Image (cartoon, rainbow, N blue to C red; front, side, top):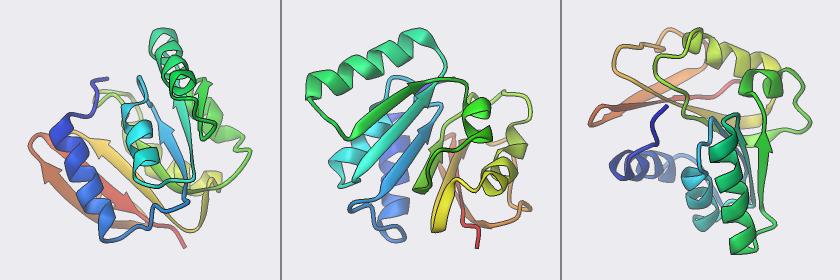
Length: 158
């Protein structure tokens, strides 16, 4: 995929700031790339971030970033996201996913997240996606916002 742009990242955190208390939150960053968004979550008060990325280069970079920062709160998992979601080890307050926009079965991700039980009670799932995808009919959809060519859709599953 392509990394979330600075503009998109700013949009994401503006969107979250009025709805989600990041202070101490357990965050899961899926398709995390080099971990830029993970680091931003930590800098904004998240208690811990687990970053999942399959691409070996990006994953190694994210691991290096975390160790350079000396952060025990950033955990990088070098694994396939779909496989990771099949056996969640813990629950998260917030799950952010920035998958490749052209990824097959991308529109099933909100349902997979809901069914996996990976979100804690009252938790939020945020999906970054391109403009050609509409997930507003998915269960748990709260709202979608557009920042340039980047779209974020928020979900919560009770």
